Image (cartoon, helix red, strand yellow):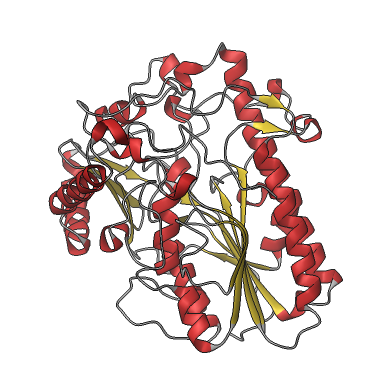
Length: 476
């Protein structure tokens, strides 16, 4: 596969894989992402290495599993170590810059960019320290609704920030068109991450009577897995809605923010084309994780169900044959793709592969994909392993879940206790242990979090540190 001169990497925040009209969503409208997918490859089974912002982004930056880099939660942001794809490009002499959300530690850290334009980092350089206290007897329950006090039409600091990011990117691309050197530009957009506030014009596209019912909702009698129930109880989320109409409005706002995001993607593509760079630039689009949007009575992310852990992934550009690829992939593969695109090198072993290589080979549905979670609300580590049609969710200290994604793509029936699936379960557990020992990783995560809390002065101090919900963006 030929490589274009330039590479534009766009990462949104909290965009579930299913919320694309080209992926068959019955409601969401994403015409610009559909056009991008139509001229490139859409990977139909893409996943995050961790379904929460900060560790997912650290894993993406380095191309390594969360338990390998030991940046476990939203209070352990990336600060430039271990080195990642940005450093590999810098060593190669490629111009590499960022615009928008990074969710790293500080603008001053050597994170692999020549310049970071209006970067959004973790609050105060420390992030959500209070949320690192995960044991049931010690964790902090904030008395604010995670999704924000207001849900509905309007502008938020996030929608304004995204507009500023798009505007700055358009200016950057105009300048880049006057320079002969190849470049890699990372653009971080925030939508459709909560707060669920969206301009009226987008919300009008999603009347409440058009919304499908919530899947497996607890108000209809569904009972969540005990680990999930404990994790969810750490936050005011579905139990914080005033009534069912506001719950439905929240879903409408999420889908409307997906369309707001899509419009911004369209503006970025227009800027590429206006500056004569469309045919010289490969575009990679993905998101750091998904969002439950009310399925199982859950909102936000933080679990291993498809709504939360699966992400959209599109690669489009010159020399790429349009179509879809069903080989399972993850954000770690994007990291390898960026390095491969510029024929750069990075020391160390990493589990990812270049998406270019994956796309050129016959589809390999049995390729193993792994994700893990050790962050807010988790009373123990959760681990996901996808192999072929089967998906294992291992909760340390709890019974596992097993889903047949081919026969049951909505994950409605747990097959872990089915004797007919005993061999499948054993095989997936072997695959999991080939990657890590869940008990050892769980203990290491708790030990690192305990040490961090002690370093800040202990639990009483930790309780006061970090944003209560969404990270505030910078002034633009």
